[in-house]
Image (cartoon, rainbow, N blue to C red):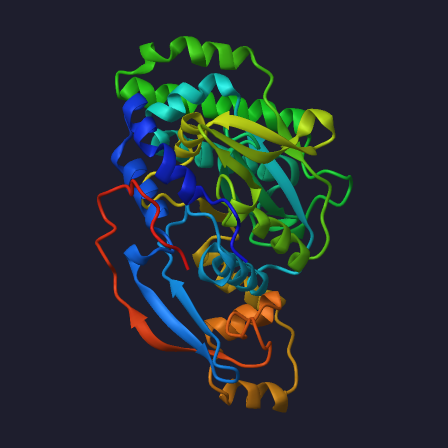
Length: 394
């Protein structure tokens, strides 16, 4: 079911006000335009009919942008399910730890000034810290799967990186070694915070100095040195499948989903947000519509920016060879051989297997299959404009 209020409605209503108050960069304008046209006649679509009862359904195409809130099978929901399924198959059957690196708000001005530089340095500093601690505490080269998040519950700018770190690695002599079993945590949190703080700020100063911009943000960096940084490290999690499903909650999320938007009235937007100062209780938050859209635009990433990265033993070149060490020799499985001879499953079949939701099932009779009977052409080009009036939705 479609949400009553959607982010596209906010964009259509408040974009002109935001554009008058704020100078948007090209990528923000492009993404907001895609969201405004998403699942409307502007992108075309198709008409479906049930093979059993004849029920007709009109579906408009998704914009496919990663910042657009998910909508069941068509958008991020399927991407997230497929990503989790692929990574579960390639994850080592060992314990993992969940570590979150956060950055204080004093540096937000630098982030807004040059997002790509800031986030690239953030990833590099996180891996440098984890790698150095792996060597110094256990004498191993470990790894990590890292995911960037940039928002807080109220859409404020809050850059942080979620990492899943395996409790194992290679020694300098090339031997496999399990680590982190002597205590609840993989590394001392206070030492981890201090090392990450020093590495990131040093890298930031060097980069800004090369661009002759250090003087613009010198005071902010000095304030960050005086601030206590937080690195959150959870105890060892369960098996690999549980760990990846947990991380999967963070991979294809966007700053806000349509289901969290409660109301759009006059010039206000009300949405649900967790209040972590009050035991993470969900509470309604009301913002000016232009301010709501401004905050959302803060989390639009640079074009082609990679927000999920793998390091060490989990990078793409290493993990293929590493997985062979954990494959047990088995006798030929006749059922598996027959299964391999069958045609590969479609995306719809795979989505149904992973989520239990069949996107092709008729919503009326619950037994028939919806099939496409005709294509719906686009009514106009969606590129390069923002819709002033909402287009009809499916």
